[in-house]
Image (cartoon, rainbow, N blue to C red):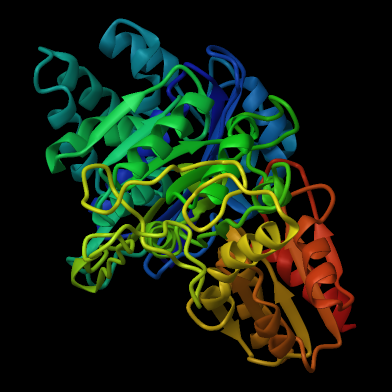
Length: 569
């Protein structure tokens, strides 16, 4: 009987084509009408080290990358040694017979494939080993290779003989594994919706920035945010925007603030180490009330840490990092599709409230490939900053208005000239240090964020509205939490989920309403100290059950379900 979904894990040495093989299978699945979601890990070194690519594909929408592996593909012995325990109860193994030895107790569900031998026979080198592996996977799950063939022909159309060699390797691999096990056959999609697209979190963010009206992007390459700089470097000029690569992260944010001062919508992207370098300029943007967007694709820390693993350990830094107290907004998208919409919100909040906005993703979400519904651009709403365009006299740049937002002058605009200073100042921007002025200006700057605590911010709810077991999380953990809650609801448990998209300012009232009848509040997050749990305790004053982990891997739905059943006993 064909399965509704299947989990495939490819593992081997960096340089063997593991990641590209995963990408090929994922793109082919998407073109074939399947829903997909992926997760990948790879070494921080330029060459060498173990890497892994997991793709889950199926008939119905998929919210997590899955746990029990149905098909494990081992390119070398280390792949088997590291990943054998990920196999599901009836999971099967494909392995390179020249490089891997499988223990006797697994032989009945293992199939040797001449990956390297066939690659050399057909292409003259082992470079096509990943295509043999891709073909073998297609043979096991009875997957039509036509989408892969189209991809290969398009990619190598300009290289004589390369496409043919890769296609021969693909077919050879499929023939090798075709008789393995029909039990892994994946059911065909009943209907392929025309509005589906495959993209990563970083791609969705870049696309969302363009849709929001991005004019200027400055960045410095850093894993796992570099894709955003690369994508915008190729695409933003077509919309009239400018992309530059700076010498470091400090220069990147300085350039962004300068561009925003002139009226441009401006952004940068980085990871934790880069955000640390930006801390002083973040304070300056808050004090001078200059809009800017900073995308932080979190990775394992501290210091250089785990550059290619996922973690949610920058939350406190995003909320509080820097000296003194200056307003900022922190947004955490939950899915690849939400990365698009949250990016537009980041620009809207930044422009309307004249504050820096940090968009907080992580390696798992940034690099994840996922089939989503194409964003409906007719639903994009753009907010613009208040300027001095309609002024009839010299503006007070930092006027103490009722909502805290003051008109922002632009260079060359009549009556709009002002000094954008980082020193404490009066309404005109003149240096001023009296206790009364500092207090009134701090109140003004923070007052701008009141709408985000009073209904303007968008949050995510799932399950029961006031459950007995309440789960609160943020960011990329949403998918596995949702699937785990579905399991618990089917078991008759009272469970609900609240994921605040805007974490700063924190939605205290929403959390109070959600947890009003809860006997337990579970907080799963990927860091060591339980940063969201601490935030909830501090802001809301309720006891929570922190379920933090820092192994560099996402939660699975089974992890979440186990947490729920444990406290429900």
